[in-house]
Amino acid sequence: MYIILKMSEKLRIRIEKYGDKTNNIVKRLRSIDIDRMFVLRELDKIQDISIFANERCGNWYCYGIYNGTCYFKSTDGHRGKWSFNDRRINIDCVIEAFKKGGLAIIDSTGNRKKKIPDSLSKTIPIWIYIFNNILCNEDISLKISLTISDEEKDEINIYLREKKEEWKKLLLTILPVEILTYLKEISWNNDNNSHRVLTPVWVYNDRPLNPIEISDIKKKGDVPIILISASDPNLKEDWYLMGSADDEEMWSAGLTTNTFYENKDLLFSCLNDSVAYKLIQKLIENKTSGHDEIHNKINLFNDSITINPNLELITSTHIAINILQTHIRLSEIQLNLDINLNSKIGIVDFLKILDNFIKMNDNNIPIIIYTNKLEIASIIVVALILIKLEFRNKFNIEIISKSEIRRIIGYIQHHLNLNRLSRNVCKQFNKYFIKNRY
Image (cartoon, rainbow, N blue to C red; front, side):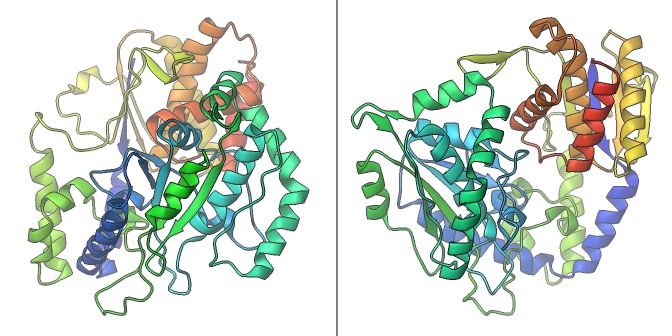
């Protein structure tokens, strides 16, 4: 079965109109480029470490060198709103950090009052704190950025003492036993006869990376998590916009990091935004005019995908997201949906229609789904198919539970590098499957 997800025409037009009104794309691209230079200089100081881009903007600052993506939201670190989010556990970051002996995460902020975003200063430190206390046999204290006031640090520590056991229990409920066992194995330090500790290190324009600090952490047998903010709040030039890469769908007009860096000098030669947008559209047309090279995002569940050597899932489902499908004849298309996944009714209708279609068709028939929520649609489609066609047969599941649904969704997000589902969508999803007794 082939599932093709395409952006709705209404959303494409809205994004293009929004982009035309931003009047800042040339400034944005120049700002991104100067921030990327800082990130590259800092990363040149260290070796043998994995680099992850935080979703929504990080990939623009470490284009061509990052090994993966993660999703830590600043809102989970806002004052008084501190949270360990069970829909954003970023398990691949933990695995990669222990396997490689270190991890760098790239992000930025558009707030000139902050040197680093809350995602780096508080969200990730809280995430590290919970994982350290899950894996280690002793109480590991919270390490937090110097950019945070002593008053707020005290507030966070008080809050964590109240929530630590609850969050640990939540994480243990979500994590499959195989993954938890694997984490304990790769985090073990035979030399010290103890588990290695994840240790955050902050890097920003006022605090460049110190290789000696990283070396000292490794000498103790621990694992540095290097949190790099690309933004420079000290740069006051008129053309510089902090956090320029954030919300790319609202300003990029379809420009990707790949197309930008391949045509950087040409884009920088544009005299104004109007010329730049025309050039971007021309570059996009040139990229997608042929079938030999496809630059839009394609995600496939292959015949065999593994999280680690001990855990494997097999599926024959193929997913293509936001890709030109001119080679598919209209006569081959059996289902064409145009659904608004913002509303509760839209989500339920989407599930019902797709569910019924899958019941009636078990051959390789393409399905094109137009939706203004690609990420939500991607996860729902794959999860529905896995639950119906794979998990019941492989794991002999008679009635699926909320925890199993959560694990399935987390697995999909991990392999398709997608953002999390909102709480509302999760509730609708759970309700649908449990009501229909899957």
